[in-house]
Length: 437
Image 1 (tube, rainbow, N blue to C red):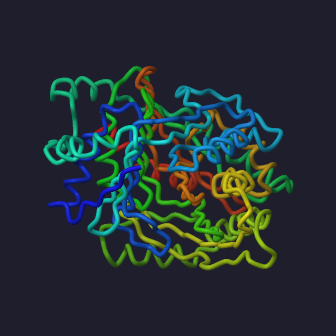
Image 2: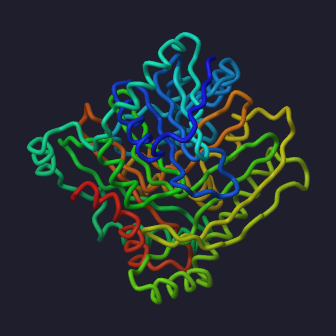
């Protein structure tokens, strides 16, 4: 492994754009950007990994066992995702809904080239097999013109003419399905469930990198992600962390509770304050906090599961969000993949009780979730990891010419079906804008 440090590039933002543009010819590229959210739990400002030396892709069958073997064998940086449907590897569950995207259910790769941004420094890691490329690559990156699109204006215009976003579930059916979910809650089958719906575009093409830049410029979330895996792309503006491991410390930061923003500062402040005291939103969040505490306790040392922050409201460009932080301590001998397996899927995207909620979700939703509401992240050589929750994201299969984004909300006894539908539209706003505009 050869490593070098690049101090104070002429402009960090320009260098990021050049770097991401430079990475596009590779079959594999993962870009993660905190968008300058320098919160206490961040390890890097941004990360880029490209060009697989080795990889693993599989369906749900023994997926976590295979990932454990792969991570243990490589003992290196590996990047990838866990799809929501890995739930079927953990419990007696199934995923039989429509899938227009056809992503593998698990995918990780060991990159040949890695770039870590922290403050005014870019740390470059190259595997020995490609270490001689470093100087040439740096020269090419610095002379690469950052572009938003590789297509001509005429081609982009043709793409836009084909953008017709369709809902997988009609508004009427959505309201009916939420009422069915409420019946399950009234009968005591569940306390809460995250119900999602898909919006999709068929027979079209988009420019993934341009679409990502537009989405990121609108949302600027702390867990923005661009993934290219051959012909499949994830363009994510996720504001939510799923799970992070640093040494023996684990943290989870579920989001539950959403309010729209207002351009009027007084009204915007009122909306934020109203969210902080909203009984329904707080109950959503607290239920998931209890679920996360239970999940973390499966691997935690006795007495170490703690709620660090409860129902704190944070402001993002599109929405206000209610976030809690839960931490635990594990034994040094605990395998990192087992920590993920014991908490997956994340409570904020399932419900409580988790297994009952997932069974009901499967019967009412129309689309296989796949990567949506799964997790994207990385493992380090010393077995630390950091994963987001895949929400506020566009998924694209170039070969199938299929574009998809899904949104959801937590259904509780106090839910109003129409308000839940309106919350989904708020969450869908940024994705719709970048695809239609």
